[in-house]
Length: 114
Figure 1 (spheres, rainbow, N blue to C red):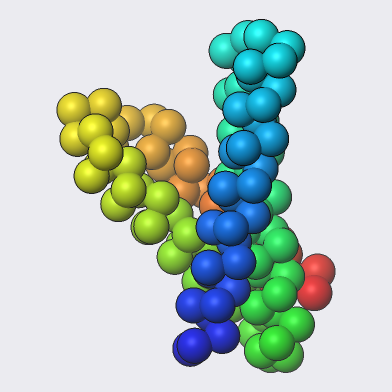
Figure 2: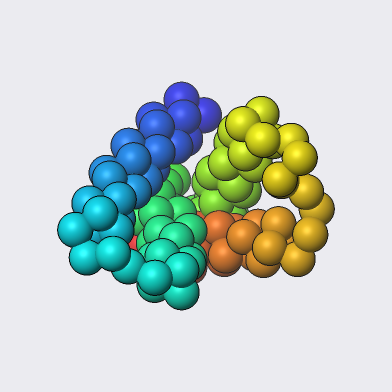
């Protein structure tokens, strides 16, 4: 279980790095809302994918399940931070469940392909 926490920590370091790159491009290129939304969706899929891939390689059996677990944990931390940062903005709307599906699906795919 400690390995999953390390993998989750790696996932959030990767998220921070990718968000910093996105912020740089937003500043330098003046990206539009659609481009930023597409980049965030890519991050929501890619980061749990890499985390699920790492978890699947380590655990060896039921790799898809470990990837799903990592994707779900990634989403739960993301949702908790979102709710804490702005409870008025975050809610159980369509994007909430879409983001959940993207994170869990990305983690599961990463575990399956490990």
